[in-house]
Image (cartoon, rainbow, N blue to C red):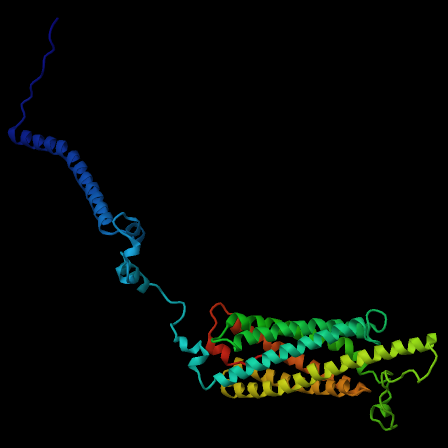
Length: 381
C-alpha cells in the first residue's frame, strides 16, 4: 500500500511567527477568564466568613455558651447593645418627642384644684343619675298614669328611654371620673366618656320626644296655661284617704290601696326631686363655671373653642331642665308647665352637647392622643 504524501509548504518566517503567537494567545485566553472568576468567588467567600465572624447579633451573643445574662449589672454590659443603640438612632419618629410633664396633673399645680373639682362633680352626677335610673324604672313598672304598657304609651316610652339614658350617663360620668380623679390624663377613659355621652344625648332626645306629647299638650286652653282662669294644675289625687271609722268595705280597701300607692309614688317623686333634680342642677352650675374657664384659655383654637361653647350652652340648658323638674317633682300637685319647660330645655341641651361629644372623640380617641389637646376641652359632659 502506498503511504499518503504530505505536502510541505514553506511559509515565510515572519508570517509563521505571527501565526504561532495567535495560537499561543488562543490557548491562554480561556484559562485566564476562569482564573479571575475563581478568584472573585473565593474573595466573596472570604469576605462573608469575615463579616460573620466580626458581626454577631445580640441574640447569638446572648445564646452563646460563654455569656450569662445573670452576670449583667448594667444595660451597657449587654453584648451588642451599641449596635442596637446605633440602629435606634436611624429610626424615624412618627411625631416629635414631647415632655411627659404635660401628661401628669402634678406637674400643673395651678390646674390641679380645678381638675379635682371636676372629679367630685363627675362622681356626684354619676350617683345622681343612678338615683334617677331607679325612679324611671319604678315609673315604668308601678307609677299610675305612665305604667307600662296599659296606662300611657307615651309615658311608658319616656320611662323606658329615661332609664336607659340614665344608665348611659352613669357610664359616661364614671369614665370622666376615671380621668379626672387619676394622676395623669387617661385618654381611654376620655374616649369612652365621649362615646357614652354621645349615646346618652340620643337617649335624651328619645325621652323628650316621647314625653313632650303629653307634657306640652294643654288642649289649646291658653287661658288655663296662663292661669287667667285662676285654676291650679290638677294634683295626682294621692291625698284622698279613708275617713276615720269607715267600715272595711271593698270600696274602702280600694281607697286604702290607692292611698298607699299614692304615698309610694310621692316618695319616688321626692327622691327624684332631691337626688336627681336639685343635685344635678347644682352640679351643672359648677360644671358651667369650669367650662367657661376652660373656654377662656382654649378659644384661640377653633375646635377646642367650639367644644367648650357647646358644652356651656348645654350646661345652662340642663340647669333650666333640672330646675323645672324640681318645681314639678318637689311640689305635691306637680306642674305640667314645668314639665313642658323641662322637655324643651332637655332637647336644647342634647342637641348642643351631642355634637360637642362627637367632636371631642377626634382628639380623645386618636391613635396617639395629645394630652395638651385633650385638656383644652376639659371638663367634658
